[in-house]
Figure 1 (cartoon, rainbow, N blue to C red):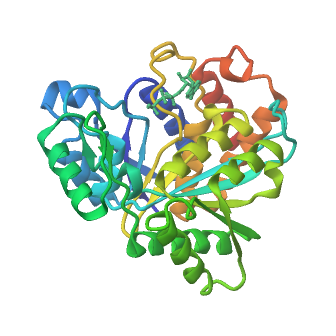
Figure 2: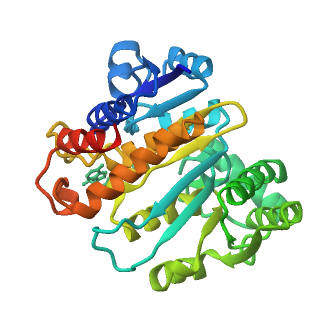
Length: 353
Ligand code: ATP
């Protein structure tokens, strides 16, 4: 069966790792019609916006997309394309696995974590009040009227909404993921003792939905305690279910535990669309030099193949990455090697083909 997939190369190292991932996917023999769509800095320059409507329309047509990182243009008034895509397509759950591969030097011998991050609410919703702006002055008055709290005149404010509906769907998606993948334990991270009306909603809703999944053990943990266990004994944790901001931070910590951002894949899922993207950003410091590690993007492509029900191809790609890392001969500089992006891609493609 042929699949149509929208490919958004992205900025910085994005086009390099996207080309690498495409080479590997094509080598598996899975027939894909790649629909390439430019977004980010180039789109901003040519079309006046980093996320033209045509990109959203393309993803809506294909339903499945894979994208490289996109830089958030600072000072142009545009919000993050990554966040905008998640919100426009209602990609409410981010799934970010972090598994230790033999051959990579890491502090902990057996880490196998999956962070499931709520993607649309929380402090990342984008409800921002700028320091000194007239709206912020109004907000200060309202907060004083209804809560008796005086927000400092020189404060900027970000609002943190967390709803039952927003939480319920990510918890269902997360617990369903755990059940389908034979995961034993889901830990809900929060700070409901300090933020009872936002994190409290997340916690209560998660525990309520957990009753629909008796086969999965669900526990809760304060996010600061989770940070401690991640540093001390990450092997005691399994699936981590988190609101947006904590999920962002914890997925980077998890990536660090298994060898860094160069090997951390990710997926953004909604009911209708799926956009696959690595955890890492556009890494402008190494862009254009052909040394970016493509493994994260290649593992992201494997997640995409699994989503397209191309299980055998996904297994082959993951096994090829595993072998390449274990052999340790063809690695990019972030993993202590001297190989270039396309050397790694070529080696994985040979093993997976
Ligand atoms: P963003 O704001 O877009 O998330 P960031 O500046 O927080 O980006 P990243 O771009 O994700 O961070 O990366 C941080 C650093 O990690 C990079 O500057 C780069 O040195 C390294 N890095 C990230 N991804 C890779 C990769 N695929 N290969 C090699 N090094 C990488």
